[in-house]
Image (tube, rainbow, N blue to C red; front, side, top):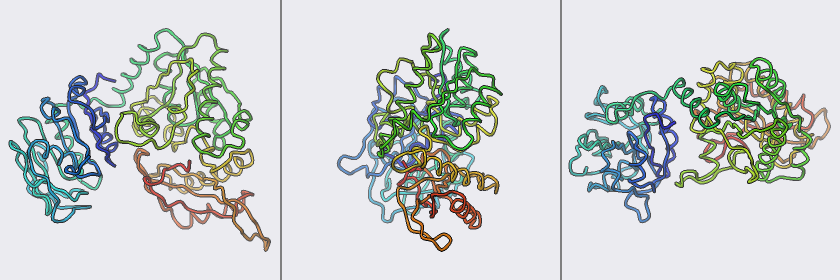
Length: 513
C-alpha cells in the first residue's frame, strides 16, 4: 500500500505509539510504526511525507535514554515531536531540557497557542500532559508557541525547517482539539492527501492481491471471526472463483458459530467453501496441555496442517489468505526491531510451521480492527459479521485457563452464550469492545439446595477499547450482571461461582491466555 502518502511514527517505547498511528489514520493518512533505531538514510529511502516522534518512559538526559539519528532533522521532511519526542528534538538541536519544578499529569491549561499547529484553534486550550521534564529553552531557530504552568515551552516550531514539538499528547481523547492540531501538521506542514479511506484501501488491496497472486488459486482460512471474513471477501473481490474458503471447525467456537459461517459464505455470498469438521483432532492434540503459548502454537500448527491437507485435495494451490491485523503483528513479535516486548503469539502470525508450502496473502496486515470493520461494510458484509466482537483464532481454548477438554468446552460455551445474549438483549453491547466468559482453573465451595458443591469458577470479561491495543474494564448495570450470574449458576452445571474481571490492558491482556 505504498501508493498512499505515509507518515512514520518513531516509537521510543511509548504507551501511545499505536494510538498516534491510529489518530493519523483517522485523519485519512497512512501511518507506519518504526523503531527508534531507524536511521535517517532508511527514512530517506522510504520517502515519507512526515515523521512523528512518540513519547516515551525515560528522561532524555538519562544515560542510555533512547536517541534519534540527528540526521532525521535535516532531511527536509516535516517532524512533529510529542512529549519525549518534543524534548528529544529540543535537546538534539541545542535547546535546554530540565526537570520541571512540578510534574504535569492529566488535563492541563495551555495558553498562548499560535503558529501553524494552532492555526484555526483558540489560543487557550486544554491538553493532556504526562511528564516530569520540560523544555525550558527552545533550540536556535525555534520559537515557543504555547506554554503551560510547568512548561515554558509547551509547544515550539521552526516552520522553515518543518520542525514542530508539543509537550502534551494530542493523540489522546482527553486533549479536545488534539485531532485538529494533528490535521494541521499532516495537511499544512506535510501536505498529505487524505486518501487513506475504505474505498482507497480496498482498491489498493485488490490491486496488490491480483499482482501477487496472478492466475493462481488461493485458499482462505475462515475462523468465524471478523478478520478472516473481511479478508475472504476482499480476496474474493480480487480473484473471484479462484478462491476457495476452508473453514476448519476445530470445535473451539462459540455457540452456533459454525452454522453461521457455513450459511454466510457457502450460502449468501456463494463462495467456494470446504467445511472441515476437525474437533476431535484438535482435542487430541491439546490433551494434557496447560501452557497458553503451547496451546496457541498447537492450534496454529494444526490449523495450517489442515489447510495443507485440504488444499492438496483441490489440486494446484499456491496461496493462503489470512486475516492478520496490524495489532496481531505488533503483539506477536518485535516486528519493527524496536522497543515493544513480545506479549503473546497469534495463531496466524506466530507458530507457523516451517513446512508451510503456501505463500501468504494478508490483505489486512496493515490495518487496525476499526479499519477492518469499515472495509467490511464497504464490501457489503452483513452487520452480524462485521460488527461482532473480536474472537481469538484459538477460540475458547484461550478462555479456558489450563487443559482444554470437551467437558470444559461445553460448559464454557453455554456460559459464554448466556453472557453474549443477555448483554445484547439489553442493548448494553454498544460501546463495548468484547464481552465473554472465561473458565478459571480453580474450584470453590458453594451451597445449592442446602447441599455442598465444589465446582468451577466463571469469570466475566467486559471491556471498552478502540483498537484492542489498550482497554478499560466496563461495569454494566447491577441487575444485568446479577441476571447473567444467576443464569450461569442455575443453567450451567459445573459452575457455582461467577466473578467480574476488573483489570485494564495494560497491565493485563484482554484474553486470559
